[in-house]
Length: 75
Image (cartoon, rainbow, N blue to C red; front, side, top):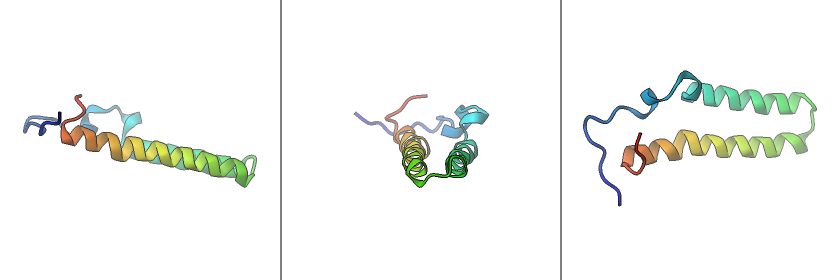
């Protein structure tokens, strides 16, 4: 059962430490993808890592904040 978030609910990202902010999630993902392409330089290694990082971004940058805003996720 979903309820609307209350007016006194803090913004989602203000509850997270610096290493769990959007800028750190995106920069870490880009670094992992870039390093997997640079070393060992194989596309068949880079593509699965890119898919995994994209899934990680989708989960932590889209799905979890949306669930928090809708009231399905409590702090």
